[in-house]
Image (cartoon, rainbow, N blue to C red; front, side, top):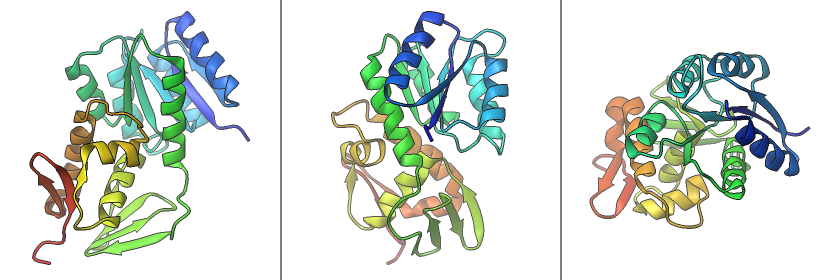
Length: 228
């Protein structure tokens, strides 16, 4: 069965363009023209990924993203924000609200498709062993859940893959470019602040355990067990 993509976009020519290219890739596409309708469809359909514009009638994209991430039914759905607001502040705000990716308008339909395919791939269950453990961390790659000393930590699929990769290469420094390639699937260098924004959100969720994620100035990040 084809994976379903929800497009929340009020510009009809843009949503038609997105729908055309996603359908060519054998994806099922549903469209909402405003934020309220988009939220309703997201809850009803539980799509495999969502493309969300920021400048929407009735409820703007930032509010939609906030409500999506606050709802258990939609919190883990991969989210790509698509907007004419290309300023770094808007991009960072979208990522901080839980978006997995951000693409400014005007955009290449081919790039949009590749990013959606990357989000879908990251959200699928991994083929490697279901459980991995390191220190107090237990990662379930089937459900994308993390247990820390018996307490469950809910992460987005991108945050899970980021943590899983760092734990899998414990002790080794991962540059921002390497993380963009391995976690996001980008083949060429893009704005590496995307990595920093997701890392900041991940650390906030880990609380005291964020000490296991080290920043190596001028290099990148690594997972280290303190005093190991």
